[in-house]
Amino acid sequence: MPPHNHGSWAAIRKISGHERNHVYWRGGGGGLIRERKMDPTPGDTLYIPEDVVRVVECIGDKDVFGLRIYCGDVLGLDRSMWAPIQFGRNRSNGRNTETLVRRATAAARVPLT
Image (cartoon, rainbow, N blue to C red; front, top):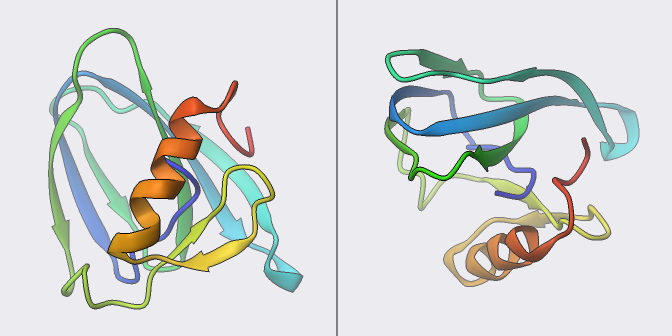
């Protein structure tokens, strides 16, 4: 998944599979500053504050499943996604999200790591 925010806080409960979360804060001028990475395991719950930007990378060969709870309508909230090549900020909506996810999936490496 390319760099993105949720437009609200989120709680994510890992059910199965392995993923790596690269967590960023937005710096001055709209740039992203890497803070840390997290590798949650099944049973872990991640709390993602509203202002956090993250990159999600599936690692391993198993599907990743989780229960995601958002504080608001994620289809109607003001969300952003950063394009994985030039890292420009875009409003996230159904039309461009799929395109950005496909580009991130095809990339040779995880963006901003």
